[in-house]
Image (cartoon, rainbow, N blue to C red):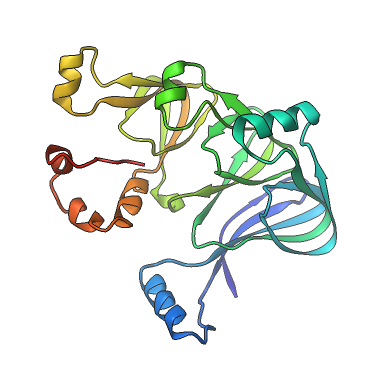
Length: 277
């Protein structure tokens, strides 16, 4: 029924796999069949995460569980104490309580036509800081908290809010990605600076500083370039970019395909919004 398109295994026997359904052909509704036909011919496929536990546990985001089999027990806690749970609720809007599944067996997470990425966090690595909604599940040893923006510009103008999700520890984090894994560009910085015109940076390692800056030091130069504000990442570490994210978002607009056929910058010249997500 499935193709295994990605897998990670820990020393304690925990295995995390991304499954891809080979084909969906069981619908008796012609309207659904029409959607499935175009989805299949465009390369879209339904995916699901399977986690195999051996006397261990995993942490899930609320609503992530699809079904499970084995000697497993679901527990709910604050994920590090009342203060941490309240902080997560008040600062990020996420649930105060986290769901954990303990024991031995197989856990299947909610399927999606979207994309799942397995990120292995090592004890020697620094934490990763990612957009809200990217973290989906994590194995034992993975801790999820909040990271506060270190400057006013990134908090007010960065498009990510005052707080982002911080994932640290040791294990495997399951992330929900807006684009396929092979469309993610992994940029490695070594005391360098990366400038991005848009908010399509998915995550960064903790050693990378995030700011929002003008594209040029002077207002005149900034207005001439037409770029305005840029997201900047500086220092040493990794930054994951999703360059195609804005393209997919624009294709959902009524005139999205037409605008993508125009020369770069033509939409801005005509006075239309040049939205990049």
